[in-house]
Image (cartoon, rainbow, N blue to C red; front, side):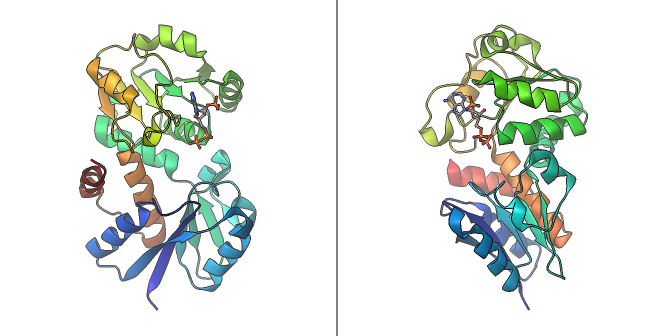
Length: 274
Ligand code: ATR
C-alpha cells in the first residue's frame, strides 16, 4: 500500500509542509503522499485515533496541538520530553505512536549551514521565553553552544527557563539592550513581526555590533523589522526559512531514513514567500 503522511493543525490552510514533503517524495522517488488535515482541539483524540486506524505512517503537529497531543501518544523521545511539545509523530508498524520534536534541532542545523563552527563559543542571547525559545535553547546547549542568556517581556518566564537549563542566565529587556554588543549570536524567537500583524521589535537594536549573527525564526515576512535593522547595522542575518526546512527534513528522515536535500527547498520557499 502507498504510504501516506499528514500535518494536523488549526488553522492548516497556510501550512507549507505538504508542498515541501511532496516535493521531497518526488525528488527521492518515494511513492508516498502528504496531506494537510484541519483538526480542532475538541477533535484531537479522535483525529489521532483516525490517523492511526487509517494507516497513516507519520504526521506533523502544528499550532495549537503541539503539547495537547502528548496524552494521546505512546512514547516520547528525549527532545519531546525536554520541550513538552511534539511536532513529529512516527507511527510504527505495530501502531505505536512515537512523538519527537525537531524544531530546536532544525534551528541548530540551519545555523550550522549558515554559520559553520563560527557561532560556537559566542555568547548567545535568546529573545523570548515561549515554546520556541525553549526548544532552540535546549538544542543549542546540547550542540555545545553557549553560554545562553534569555530576555523576555515577561521576565518570570525567562527566569523559569534559565533554572531548567545549565550555563544560562537572565537579563531584563533593558539590560539586554544595553549589553547587545557583547553577544555574538542573537536569536529572536518571539512572534513580534510575524505576518505583519505584530508590528515593531522585541527590543531596541541600537547597540548591536557589526559582525553579530542575528537569527529570526519568523519566515513570513522573510525579513522582520528587527532583522532589517540588524542587517543595516552590519550583522549577518538569517530568517526562519532554514529552521522550517530543517525541522521538516528531520521529520522526513525519521519516517523514511532518507536525508532530503534542503538547499533547493530553502530557495524554493524563499521564492514563494518573496
Ligand atoms: P512559541 O511557541 O512560538 O514560542 P509562545 O510560547 O506563545 O509561542 O511564546 C511567545 C513568545 O513571544 C513569548 O516569549 C512572548 O512574551 P511573553 O512571555 O511576555 O508573553 C513573546 N511575545 C509575544 N508577543 C510579544 C510582544 N508584543 N512583545 C514582546 N514579546 C512578545
